[in-house]
Image (cartoon, rainbow, N blue to C red; front, side, top):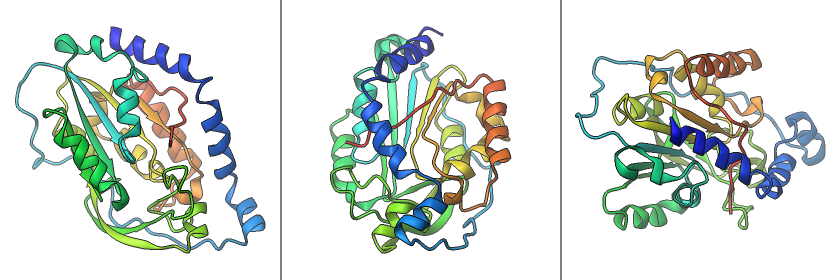
Length: 267
C-alpha cells in the first residue's frame, strides 16, 4: 500500500535528525546491572497485574465505514508524536484511504499530560480520542504507575509500570494508581481490515508483555506498521524472555506487520 511505503521512506529520512534522541535514550537504557553499579539501584521482583487477553467474544467490532488511517499512540506524552504523525513522520496523511482520512487514539498513563491531551481531543473535530491517566497493557484492570519526576526537559520520559525503570528509581518510586487498557481489544474495536493501522509504542518496558500477547491474537492481522522503542527486559512485569520478544516480532512480521527500527522523540 502506498501509505505504508511512504511511512517507511519518511521514517528512514528522519532517522538522522532523530540521532540526538537515540543518543540520549541509549544512555538511559544501559543494562540494569550497570545501572545498579553506577546508581546503586535495587531491582524488585514483579508480577503482571493481569494475564494476556488476546481475544473475546464480548469485544465489539467497529461499524462499517469508509477506510482510513488509524494512528494508535501508546505513550503519547503531551501529544508530541501525534504532532509528528500530522507532519508526516509516519507517512504523508494525504495518502491515507478515503482522501486522507485518519483518526488518532492517544494513550498516556502519566497524569501530568491529562490536560494537554484533553485539549488536543477537544480541538480535533473528532479526529482524536485521548485516554489520559491510562496505561497501555495486554489486559484490563488497574495497577501502580511509577513517575519519572526528574527528567523535566525530556518530558518525564522514564515513567513506567515497572518499579525497576532507571528514572523511576531516580525519582524515588513515586507512584499513582491507573486503569489498564487492553491494547489488543482497543485495536479490535476500532480498526477495520481496510484501514491502514499504525501503532507507535514507547511504554518503558511494557512492550515486552504486550507484543507476545498481540502476536498470538488474530487481531494482529489488523496492524500494518509497528513502531516500537525497545527497552531493557528487566522492565517487563510478566518476566518475558528475550526469546518471547524475538518470537513475537518474528510472528508479527510473518503476518505482514512492518517493524522498522524506531526511537521515539520525547521533546
